[in-house]
Amino acid sequence: MSTNPNIVSYVAAGAITEFAIVSMDSDGKIVVTTAATDNKVVGVAQRACSAGDSVEVLVQGITRVIASEAIDSTTPILSADTAGKVQPCEAADVTFFPVARFLPNINQTSVAADDQCFVVFSGPSSLNT
Image (cartoon, rainbow, N blue to C red; front, side):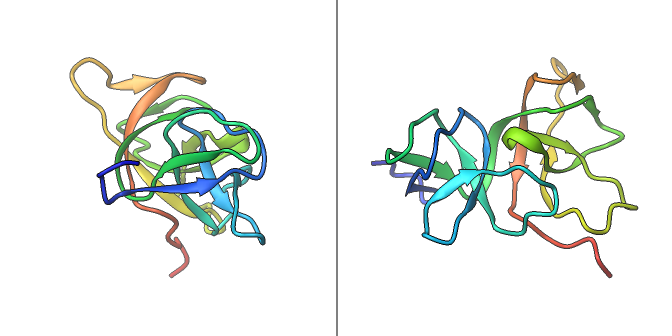
């Protein structure tokens, strides 16, 4: 059991990959998030697991995620994408729910598709004004 108050254990409804963005299903279990329009995102799985396993999920704070496409400091606001990955969230995408902010550093100013990167995960928020 984690002593980090920002990590919560959930039961997985299906297979989950390490550092995948996850959402709550109607049974209270977590599943891999598959759309930027999903407002039921709860966090980032901290390890891979199978259906029925308990998995630690970071619900707020700094964590690794997997990029679905190129990300850099010009596109720092991120939303979920297919397979629990993250993608840049453009201001024009008013149906997307931003879930995280890219944290570039001197060693990693940008990432390509399928690269891991650090983000500040904050959960879904609306771009609708």
